[in-house]
Length: 235
Image (cartoon, rainbow, N blue to C red):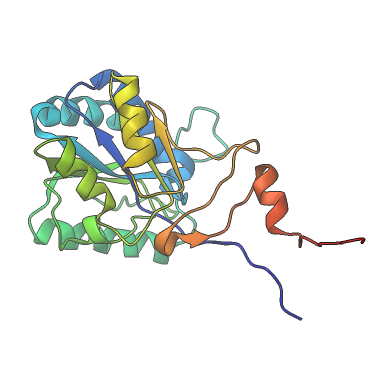
């Protein structure tokens, strides 16, 4: 018997940091979005596409925020970020970081496997990430942020869409009308948040486009995905 399916297949969410962004807001949102569940989330922020006018300021503030995160035992109430799920996943993530650096990315923070027991990987920031690097092309399923420079809004949008994924995305700007326009009309993904980190909400439909899957979970749209519409005509 055939069954309907809903597939959510992961993502590499772009966050656009525009030249008019509040950089403190951008750093806060980006840190929150990148480190949710130690970066092991389909809708975690992964690619930070930063307009060049604010790249240096954003990098400094973002690194400052990421560097304050306390990594450690999840049972310790002071811990802010725990380990990854398995050692092989941690090691695969580290290989992506090393390969990106070998191809020209610059390491701003982290990138060193700690000696302590457990599949820990520190908050890591790469910048000058370009096409052809794992940090640009692949999903980074862990606490590694890829900063990709853009010369302006149009290039930032094109870079955001230059991916096989299309699950979530974000736009950081002081101009809410501009952010709404870009989110609604330009970014190819199932959901886009303006000045906040992408997150699922039972009131809102959740799902992706392109290779991030099809169908929707949550909300009334999600309920309808798992039922069949029946037509009855009485003459």
